[in-house]
Amino acid sequence: MRILTKREIQKLYEEDFYLWIKTQIELLKEKRWELIDIENLIEELESMGRSEIRSLASYIGILFAHLYKWDQFPEKRTRSWMNSILYSRKDILKLLKKQPSLKSKLNEAIEDGWDEAKKIIVKDTDIDYRTLPDNSPYTFEDAMNRKIEL
Image 1 (cartoon, rainbow, N blue to C red):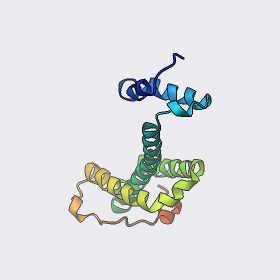
Image 2 (image 1 turned 180 degrees about the vertical axis):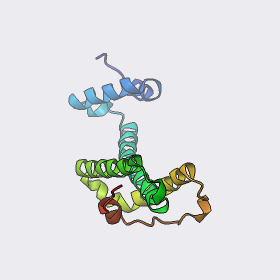
Image 3 (image 1 turned 90 degrees about the vertical axis):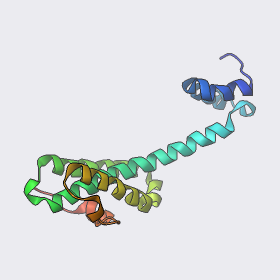
C-alpha cells in the first residue's frame, strides 16, 4: 500500500469508501494508530450498531404485521402469512443469538417494528391507519411463541 497522509486518508472517506475501509483495516493491522481516521471510523461503527437495531425492528415489523392480519382476517389466512410469521421468528432468534446485546434494545425495536407493521398492514389491507393501535397489541413473548396453524 502506498503511504498516504492522514489528510489523504480522510479524503478517501468521501471519494472512495471501499478503499477507505481497506486502508483503515491495513492501518489497524499494522498498528499505525496515528494515521487512522478515528472520527469517521467511530461514525461508521455507530452506524453499524444502528443498522443491527433496524434489522431487528424490521423482522419484528414483518412478524407483527402478519400476526395482525392473521388475527383480523382469519378467512384470508394463507400459507404465505404463516411462513412469514415462522421465518420472521427464526430471523429474530438468529439475530439475537448472533448479537445477544441487542436484547437490551428490544423495547426500541418493538416500538419501531410496530410502526413498520402498521405501514405494511395499511398497504396490504383496507384498514385505515388511524384505527390501528398506537402501541403493538402483541408482547414479544406472545408474538414469538404463539402457535400458528392453517
